[in-house]
Amino acid sequence: MEIIRTIKLFKSCYKDFYVSQTKKVRDKINFVLKLVETQRMIPKKVFQVY
Image 1: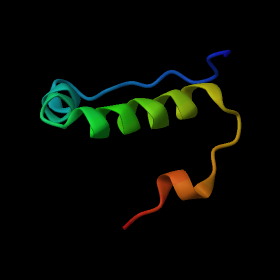
Image 2 (image 1 turned 60 degrees about the horizontal axis):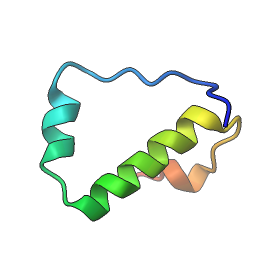
Image 3 (image 1 turned 90 degrees about the vertical axis):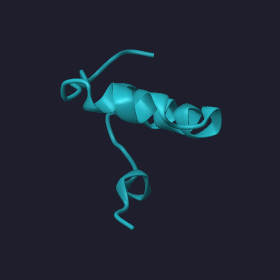
Image 4 (image 1 turned 180 degrees about the vertical axis):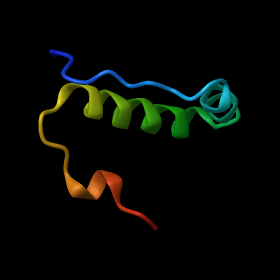
């Protein structure tokens, strides 16, 4: 897949958050980040605010 966007992370906040998650949650985070990075159009459902 071609990378369309570059994701910039804020300091170590992301790393601290990411490491504290379970494997299942980390897999979901990785999936969404890869989606954002590689897709031209991102479904609104991905960024729903709860």
